[in-house]
Image (cartoon, rainbow, N blue to C red; front, side):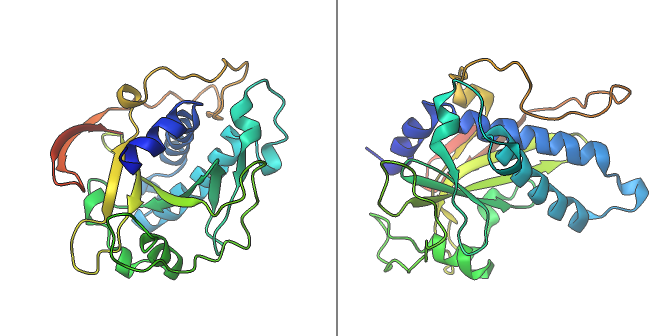
Length: 242
């Protein structure tokens, strides 16, 4: 089985990928209802804030840190742990760890890992079945071990972006590829859309996972963006991005 499909099957089953999507949607709504260009906020402001708020929302949706402990019958929540890598925020479920990467909207295939941080460069050089490069030592001394899991995790990247007007979201999970050659930044990537994820297997919750705004603020409509692009495997697909 292809690694991308195997990872998808493992992570979508318990609702882990649904939780990632919920956190991204919540973070995007919060950022674009709190910041505005008319008030002087620029792209850099949106970028830093989006990353920070998404980190907090992921902790919230998994009931970690200040948002824990989990008081629910959802077995997913007790199986997810923070798994930072060299100070970069990460979350681990089973044998997979997920780190964050924000990119310019519409440019998920334009990421240059060779120009990223040393940690992200190392992640993009992980050993891969079709990759002739040698694996780098990713450290991992700060990775909490999930009960029953003792091996080093496979580190994936949650690539996230959004546009303000109209408000559109993009979210991808993938295995980064070190692309100093100018080629694809992904060995594989999958779009996390409602259609692709399917029904949420997590138990219904009494409280929403995302904090919205005050009652006098209107909800912000979200629009799905149909993006046609060439995947890392060389095939062309139409992906409704978010």
